[in-house]
Image 1: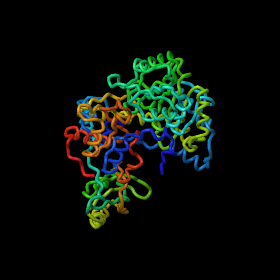
Image 2: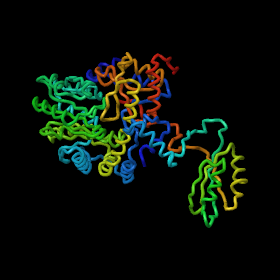
Image 3: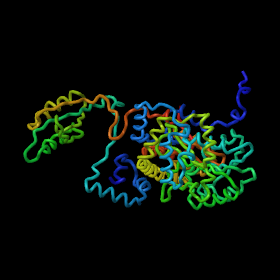
Image 4: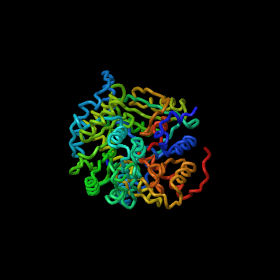
Length: 160
Length: 395
């Protein structure tokens, strides 16, 4: 993958000039390349990674395995699109393993909200055969960022 | 009780490391962002760790031969030939040590007799001076200069040579300045060394970490120099293996043989598990080195750009993983700069003076950190430069 994308995936906050310095290109070149990537839909957007355990009432996350009956024409896509359109769904992937087909990462204000989403919106879809919901208890790492607070300060102390 | 009576005078008068103070302030402050370490932030590549684990599972927990496993010495020999084009006989010209540090100590103690002068370019890593004193030698400092890219020049060297000069320490790629010596610079130094019949201790621990078009040249690869050079290197920086404590010395068999005696009595043999891991590293780790070097290079470019934008003159470092910006424009001393920076913005860097008096007016900044960490630290340093008299944060 282009190093420019690797850098942006790692940290979206680099300025054009910082990216230019790191990659030995001009700011104009970097700006143009990023715009091209956005136009082609390679760069979809940016977001901030939040450790919700540090907040009060920050909601709950669940991972839902979904078994789907594929459609003759569109396979899993049609159902996946419907699942993706729900506000509670943060991410959805086709996994097609032996036990389930789609996997969705879902967010809700509380357990009741997620349960109600599964019972009323997800399970009631015609093509959904069954679901298995796993509530997330602790987040240890997300999008490459570790949430584990042991930042080995002591090990990496000042040295000459 | 008067312990001074029981403490060796030479040890007692060695000055402790100059950074204790900042370390204590950082600990007291808490939540300090540090750019002060001298080791890779990468973990040892997994296949290398696995080789160590595997050796433990197979119960390989005994001493190794004093010089290190023969297999390891063969791999070191092949590696050094492959990378730096000097051939060492694995049976007689290689000693595996507890890090590069032990090899430096052993070499200095083996070569230096009472009253011998040891030429030490500064700013440089801090061990050469005290180790020379402990060997009853006389350290002679040679100040390298920013206008020469902190390289040692033949004139500077020649001006410090006396009939007592015996050993030249050649610490390049350099910690803390990031300076490297290209072939043409080394040729000039080699001429002086041969002319005055000096010996060289070439500390090449950062030899794999050079950026730009030219890779590291070992002075031992120049004509007539292998016979008068001890090369020190190791696994810490290139393979991210600092905690494994493994290094080596390469040199004429007459010197290595004497160093091996010291090593035998003081150490016995370097860590066994680390030796197994190192064999794997030498065999299959060239790609890891390449990967880490590329990552350091991106960080290096980011940090040099950052300091330049802040208006701090930053000589472009070509090796190791440090930058050595001048802070003279702030009107502060290195100590004042570091103390104020840590107290008002919670960023820890090391004063240039920790690496020799001639480091005054500079700071050493390590870029062995993630890009996000470096960005945050740069932002804070910039706030500090723009407002150096901001109130101190309560500890």
